Image 1 (cartoon, rainbow, N blue to C red):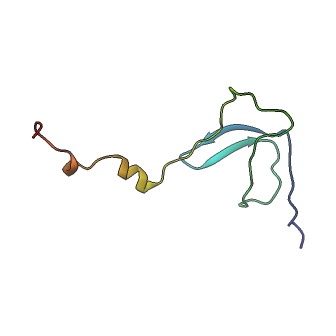
Image 2 (cartoon, rainbow, N blue to C red):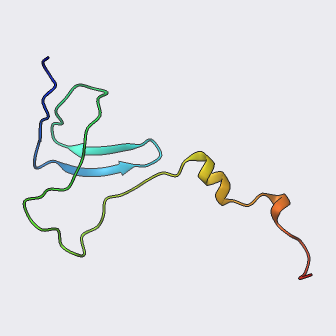
Length: 81
């Protein structure tokens, strides 16, 4: 069973994220074959400063985006009754 070993690679840099396509662009060699899942996490060698940015970009699901915008029929027109 070759290839079932977890490999940790250090000193990689997240260059950019593309939320529309669901991509994380990383500078450096990422172990594994193309199309496999990887886990990206912060380094644990030093304490993270309190003002460090949190690298999170989550795109909303299609049904959540549609629910966030009220439909034209749901908007009441006129004054207070």
